[in-house]
Image (tube, rainbow, N blue to C red; front, side):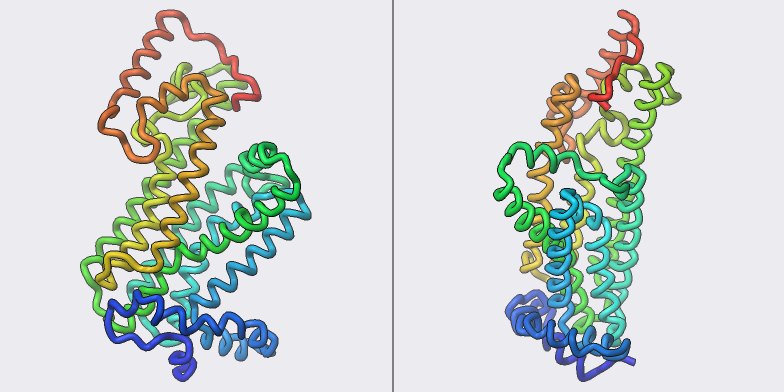
Length: 366
């Protein structure tokens, strides 16, 4: 049974959809609960008292506090193990966890919402896809680490500075960001109390999110299939079905969705969290709200990390500069649309004319 008195203690009183997106009304009054959390946690002595504490704390406050706790754990573990991919391992889980948290909190407090049902279902599917892809690439293997951290650490070349960077950015900013991208779901929790009826946006956005998830799925599989084919070719010098020697010797995937975008999976991933934010905007009939910070921060992460990834790739594969000049980074470029395909066809013809060399890739190019 929902604890009605606690429900009113933990959520703001809102009368209009616009008020649901007002930070001063929906978040600021509950900030003191953050400082009360340690005492409340110490008072937990049973499952019943745990549920009481959980439902009596504003869900955005408890989510924020948990993100700080994750940051502390990630920092300590990374410093002990000298492995800085602790947040990377949780990246596919935390945003979904926060979205499900808002849905579950609402359920415990008697708030039934098809909006939140849709968000929770999508989040589980999103998490399953990304977690599986990270797992099959070896992300959860002991000692596995994103190769970019080692490169950045080498560039910093200063242990105290790197430790501060690890503490501030890798551990805390990234952890808080993964909570922030889910804050639009908090707004939808509030709108579900004001207006339970589904709007056109509540129909369109779940479908858009599903489409973006499908794009990610195909992009990941195209890259995975290519990389496995390349490895087989390097071992056996035999070209697997569906590929040509020229494609495999190029070293990086360019077929399928990758023919139109250099990072179709990244593009869809960013669009997902922008779409969730926009969904909250439409539901509150507002152009912008405070949860913009999460979506914007997510975009900044990709704007900063993708150029580094591309510099590394360009250093390994000579043709990448040609690919980069003809294909848009995230969004297909109308000015260069079709140019890469023409280039690739020309290279295929050139390879057939000159004779295709055997597999000569070294471990460096893998």
